[in-house]
Image (spheres, rainbow, N blue to C red):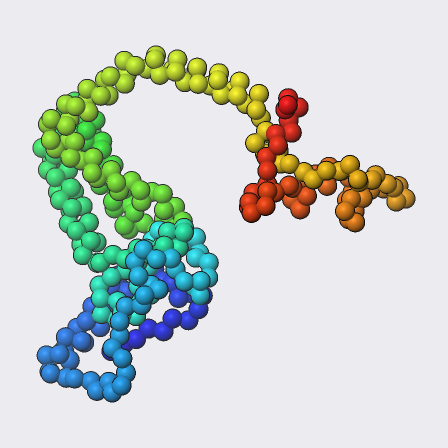
Length: 287
């Protein structure tokens, strides 16, 4: 049976491609052929391969793998667990927090199936009604804009290398909205909501205006107050000069000015046991 070693570092991570799936299928075929011939490999005292506890779904990627390249975040990757890599049709996806999500390959086949169904449905509509020239054609119906966008984005995200532009893949969630155009009752409800929003446009503009006014008032009154930290007392500190330079002496250390002393995080006052410095609100209007 083929095994996979896990050298440290992000170079272990590879995109899950059609070639990866073909390699998995080949390993599964070889394993089935061995079982068909009643072939039993003598493992001796070697322990049977089991899923690694530190590579379970939902856990964070071990630190041995280092930082994840941005191009490998949110995309299918070869499974890094030898138990699944050898003869399981699985792949993993890592998020920015290095959490592991494991999927089986059948989900990809389901995606292809529904994409084919949606494509066939749209082609029938285009042949029956026309594409866009003339009234009552396919794209003259706003509900068909959604169907057309979903199908186009499905093919674009599948066959076009988007690089780091993984945000386009989020358009796949729009497929769930196709149920609106299928169920007449939902289409009526959504249409009524859209018409209601249009009627409330003036009210929404007035609301945004009022919120903006209060936001500006709050900005002027409290700007920077939550960023001003309490600083240790400078009563025992001295200003001095060295040549043409002005220096600030405090706690047996030297700063170029009192402003540098105040901005140094070492001089922030922290309550015992607290991680963050105490906020004082040293604004011009602070009490």
